[in-house]
Image (cartoon, one colour):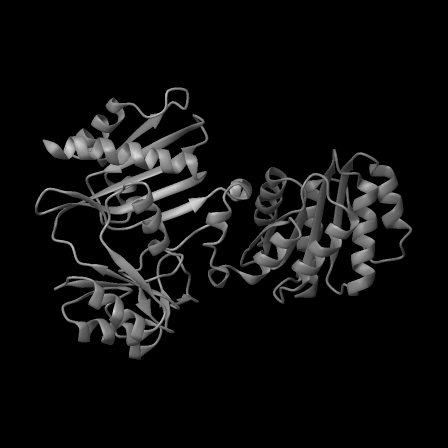
Length: 399
């Protein structure tokens, strides 16, 4: 789950992490009032969407101007002008895709006198089972480009959960960022507070780009991108309250109501699979055979017949789906239950697109027998490669 920058900065303040003062605004009038609460004489007007690259983004509407989604205002009148241009408009960035995101809220922040821009992030490193801090003196840039072109500028430090944060961690980060004097001590406190926040709030990612050194030598977090582990949200109702459903795909929201892991993709073959790893393999082999998956959909290890039916509804709600591949390995999940769910869904929704089903595992023979005797046009597959070939061949015939 993601949250907006202004929400992330409220968390910063709760954990003693230095960040400029600012206020969220949902209208032009609120933006003006927010600016009046801040000293100025420079204010930053920031579009609030769940995507990076806002500063370099472009609005689809000509009336929004061409200054991107992060703008410096030198007067209250400019704050009003920028708010009018940005609210309700569609911002396109490198992370939104061509469709962009509609800006429904702004963050009005006090300006900062910047001397240096740095990069700092913390994430769960699955290879080491530790929280890793990634830092670079090349802040304010796309970190992906820095990693590709000048990887020597990026430094990584992991923290052993058995010991937690130790002062030497802060010093290593400070030295990697080229900090000196009192800044080293400030960096230590910053890293300590960030680590505590990441662990206590079950974050999967925290990114600060840029972390700046001001002209008076202070460290300030000018940005805040936070992702939370959705599997741990039951422990954090206060974080769940920050969820902005308007920033999420409506189909993915509906899938979450039925405990289905779903991600919309750009292809035309709907996938219904149990297990994330098998789902990834299914999408890979579809691409190997020259087609594109329309979604990632994991029904989980213990799906019921009703859950399978809901999964079909979600897949078929996408008009781009021209065929469906069901790929089930029955361990905890029994193949006969899946077969009954497939048949129920096919009859209830009168599925018109080609449907290929590959079953393997517990009660596989009974599952195949149920599908064969259903009288429905369901194409059986012997293995994953056979399933991918059959669904792609079916789509070629339709085309």
